[in-house]
Image (cartoon, rainbow, N blue to C red; front, side, top):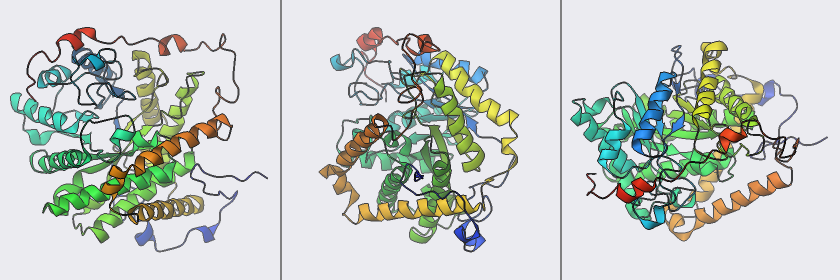
Length: 478
């Protein structure tokens, strides 16, 4: 009989029994909203999660229209992507002016072009800052500065801002978002943003640990979580060394995690991450505020799991991952976005946005899914798997930290080499059929028959040459 393994290599038994789950209930689990937060960081409220879709395309005005289209469809939060991913010459995420010659053919093709405060004014025109959660993958220092100034300009207290910015000094240059700055400067600016937000924008998450973006380099669930905690721990230590109190900033740390197609393991990963974070904050860093121990977790379904072949299949993949994270894994989920069916080709089209958002809404409103929190809690199988995932995450964190200062590992190329290895491993697994992809390496069809949704998916986004020519002709205000 074939051995059943998770993506992280954990062996699964066909049947589980009472001996698989032992220990004191309050110590290992607790009710939702209680330490150690295994079953959720919030008590049952009956509310759903923030429903949003990754958006931003072309210039700020076009992206603003995209936001308003999604809000009219019922979206309850904004998730903004700067023109960025997978290209070292995409200006916003590379801290490059869009009028730079190298940026000419990429401006606005993989997100919205943002390089000055006027861009943020146009991007968020007529968006109610005090009512809408705004999360951004753009450079955090510029995003926070503009959000703060916009609130001032509109007569809104900056302290009402909700949302998040990503801090990623460890891994950004190895996985798509190549900030052109030395590591020490990047770390310092990240900590500056976190400290500023803790004082001036206390409802805003000045530190979102984005394990999603680097997990798309082929990492499994254990590797994703372990590397996330290595970065969290280093940033926390750096902030404490500045003299900050742990409870002054820890309540506004959040994690954006991935969800692959490994259904059970992804649920166990989320539960384990909550428990690890709670214990780490309380036992290691001395956090006394319960909010510091209850990390907010947002989720993004896996783009790596999607295929360019038979793009309609991606709709099913997004729905399955949403059910895993919302229904069974994330009691108290804070926010969710679905990687859309055309992810393999482009940033989401209007049609793909509609399908992604409606998928969330159907699951939320038609399935009775929010009636019970953490329905797998107490399952002999799930508690055993959660324990094993947690143990492996902690072992990997300890192994990495035993090599020395993680900041030195960044400079030495340790993580770059690690990511190159995981990328190659994943592609070999797909190529060899170890990881099955319907339409790609199993149940294929001839190209002439593979037409469903392909016309939408293959529609090109033209570079914004006009923006490239004029966008930074004036001295930027931020």
